[in-house]
Amino acid sequence: MDVNADLHIHSKYSMATSNKMDMPTIAREAAKKGVHLVGTGDCLHAGWMESIKKLPESDGIFSLDNTSFVLTVEVEDSRRVHHLLIIPSVSKAEELRERFADHSHDIDTNGRPAVRLSGTEIAEYARDAGALIGPCHAFTPWTAMYAYHNSLSDCYSDLSDYISFVELGLSADTSYADRISELHRLTFLTNSDAHSPWPNKLAREFNRFEMPEITFDNLESAILRKNGCKPVLNVGMFPEEGKYNESACIRCFKHYALPDCLAKKWRCRCGGRIKKGVHDRVNELADLPAPDHPDHRPRYLHLIPLAEIIAIAIGHSSPQTKAVQAAWNTLVKGPGSEIAVLVDGDLSDMGGVDAKVLDAIRAFRSGEVIIHPGGGGRYGTVELPDGAGVGVAGVTVTGPTGTVPDQRTLFDF
Image (cartoon, rainbow, N blue to C red; front, side, top):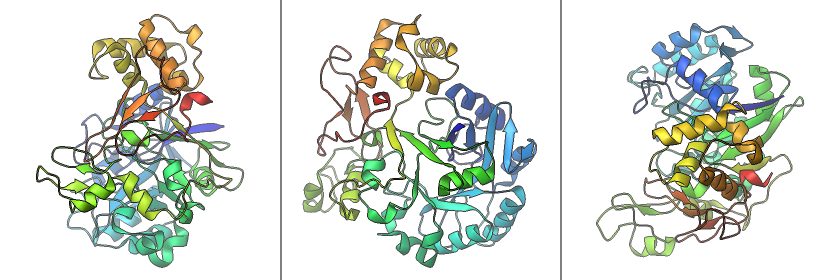
C-alpha cells in the first residue's frame, strides 16, 4: 500500500504553535489533507505524552479515527543543531526522556527540548533506544546540521553510519541535496514542520512510502529501504519558496548574490545582517557540479497547498478567506482529500468553482509558474503568468539564482 506520511510536526506544547495542535484536530485535518501517517512530534513532553497514551496502540502505531501516529521528537543539541528522532515505543520514549532530562534545564519547558549534548551523543542515545535519527531541515542557516558542520561526520562523528535519513527542509529539494555525494546513501524525508494543523501547513511537504501495512517496523524498513518497503515519492514546495533559499538581509530582506555578500562582509546597506541562503550553502558544500541521483532516490514532485493555488487564482492575500475555503471544500468533496485533488484529480470532472481556479491548477500542472525566491526569513512567493497558464514553459525563478529548470512539478506525472 502507498502511505502518505508527514513525520515532523509540533504539538501545542512547543513554542509558537497553535493551541489547536491537539490530537483530535490533527487527526481530522490530516484526513482532509490525505495523509495516513503523522509523526506525533514532542513525544518527550510529559503533557503531550499523556495525550498520546490515551490512543489505541499496535505495533508502535497510535490511531485516532482514520489517522495513524508514530512517536517523534525534534531535539536541539548544544550547538543549536536540530535532530529528528522516530521512536519505536512509549517505553523507549520514556527511556530517552529520562536520559535527556539529565542534560536539560527543564525538559518540559518546550515540546522541542534543548539538551547539553552533541549530535554524536544524541545519536548514541537514539541508537541505544532503537530509534531512527537524522538531521532536521539540514540546510537552513539557523538550526541545521550544515549551518554548523561541513559533513555528516563533523556532526555525528563515529555514529555517522547510524544516520538513516536527512530531512531536506522547505528551502531544499532532491536536486540540491544530491549534489553532495555523502548524502547519496541516505533516504531523503520531506516533512512539514507544521506549527498549525490546517491543510495549508500540515503536510505542505510529505513522503509517500510503499509498505504492506502501517507499523513501526515497516516504517523503519521503508526509510532503510529493505524488506520490500521503500520511499516512492517526495512531495514538497519549490525550494525557492523557502524563507532562507537565497542569501538576504534579515532586516530589510534585500537579496544578494554570493560575491556581493562577500564584498559587503555579510552586512546589508541598511545595517542589517545578510544571512547565507540554502542555495549558496549548497554550492559551497557540493562536490558535484550537478545532481547525481542514486538509483534508490524517488521522484521529487513540487507542490504548493491547494488553498494557496486558489488564493492566487482569485486574487486573495490569504488561503484562509471564506471564498478560498469554500472553493477548497467544493474541490475536495468529491475526491475526498486535498492530495487526491492535486495528484489524481481530473479537471474535467470538477465544477462548482470559479473557472480561474481550474485555470490555475492547469497552470501548475504544466509548470507555468513564476517564483520570487525567499530569503532572510521571508518566504518566497509564487504567481501565475499573465493569462493564468499562457506564458513561460517550465518554472521561472526570479532573483540572483536565475532559473532552475531540472526538477519537474507534481503535475508532470
